[in-house]
Image (cartoon, rainbow, N blue to C red; front, side, top):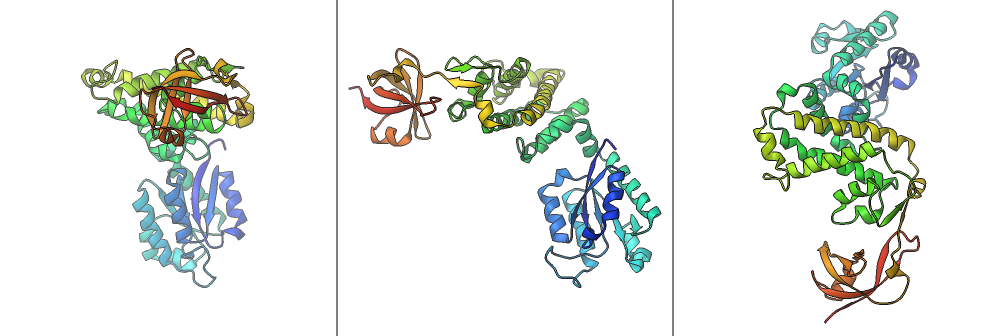
Length: 387
């Protein structure tokens, strides 16, 4: 089947139940098995958005390392409560080989969906019900409609902490009439773009020198556009449309993150607008960008290969030991930034050198600079204040 559903399964005998695994596959379900309440519920709490339903045995361990003979039905009742506390939209089913439990009116009142293990008809009905529950769950429907966007919100890409942000944005697109204060979501959108930049740096598509600079957000966008004159581009880093998407998203979200706006007055505009079209268009640009980057990251995972797509231009001031005049234009977290008078070259100065030389903002200084061994970054070798 084309659609796959992730079902968390707690059964202390799951390793021997190969037929159940095979039946699940036939119904497009992937089972993620655990032996105990704490093992399964611990996984569910850590990766809640991964799962579309839960399958339980009637009797299992409290902990994964418990010995045979300590199984108990009380753990399934506690597990049910934990599932409800975590997410009331998650359906849960019981597949048991305990004849007394299967026939118990009290147990069936507590668990309305109980099926008999080892009975083909019951197991087939169980998995049909599981599929129906998954198909009818709104979050699962959205994950299937926007698979790449939600997949980006995993640790392999930008991190699962962004899942709720993407979920909220998708809900706004699906139900635009329910959008209230659209500008309140702009900061979260900007953070998603920042996370994309961090991932691109991790795989070598954005240099460390860019990502470590104070203005790294706009600097990363500018670098990806292919217009940073401090670098030679051996090929396009990303598609120009995606570079444009990023620039527009940042222009809107950064301006809209301030009550008055710095240039466009986005917050005030959205507040007074009779519609949410600007907000929706920005969300759609972000969803398009996430879609594209999922495929890009999958096909460009090699950091060393990605780093060959760009080269740092070593400026002329690094070719000799002559002193170069300039000014300290920024101090941030102890780091200083030197700008030369003649080349307008920006070079970072480490905190220890700033401190030992008692460097302050706007100081006039002379430096001797040298490139790093890979010639991808400039370093200050010597520095002295101009009296």
